[in-house]
Length: 158
Image 1 (cartoon, rainbow, N blue to C red):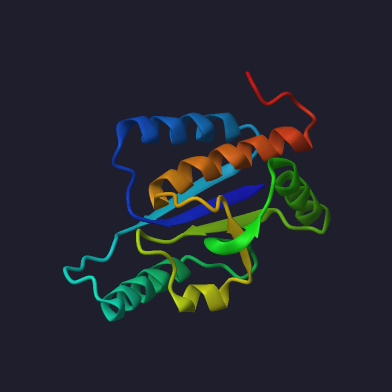
Image 2: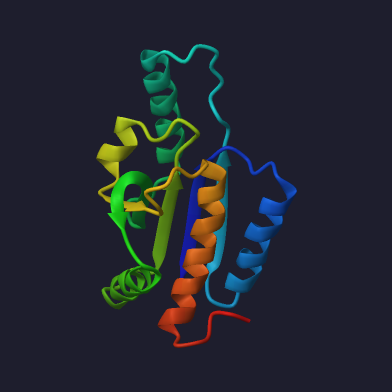
C-alpha cells in the first residue's frame, strides 16, 4: 500500500511534527507514506475575490501531484463524515477492489478551491469542527494508522 498526502503549508509546531512523525513511523510496516508539501500562497487583503484566487492557486498546486490511477480523497468540510471503523471498512473495500495507492489532499488555511473540488470526487470530512489544515494532517495520519490496525484486527493502543 502506498499513501500520499499532498498538503498546502509546512508543519511549524514542533509537537505537531513529532506527532505526525510518530504515526509515520508506526505506519512503516504497513504502508509506504509520502508527504508532499506545497507552499502557501501569500496574500494581504482578505476580500472574498482574493480568497477565491488564493484557494484556486493552491488547488492547482495540489492537483499537479495528482495521479489519476490513485484513489484520490479530498479533505473537505463538505465531505462525508465517517467513524474510524467506517474509514477502515472503506479502505478495506477499496483494497479488495484492487486499489493499493491512496492520495489524500489537504488545502490551505482558506480551504479548497472549486478546481480541486471538481477534480476529486470523494471528499472526506474529519470533523464538523473547524480544524487548522496542519491539525488535519496529524488527525489524518492517526486515522490512517487506526484504520490499518482495525483492518488487521490488531489492538490500536500500544
